[in-house]
Image (cartoon, rainbow, N blue to C red; front, side, top):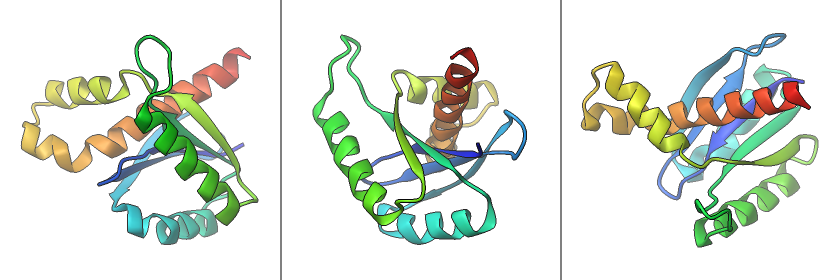
Length: 136
């Protein structure tokens, strides 16, 4: 299995990928939603991606929020466009906070973080997914 992690947003989508044969995850880029399908097709052509893990916003109480339903609907649409890929929702609670914290520790200002926080969140989402797969 080689996987992608996706941090979906209505303004930006962060993408991260697993390095083939390892559990190492690297950021790919942040794209606008209207550019995502083309970029994903390019990534699929370049790498042997079998699975895509999409961050699923769940409230701290464990319930699906409005944004969670939006992500689920978006992913269902992508499953139809890219049917050869196995799509998964993964709990993304606190991934943005973790991403912001790690970027702050690097000394990046909020303005600089804005440009890369979505792909950093995608890295965290995919790292959590791979860790969960190892445990199962």
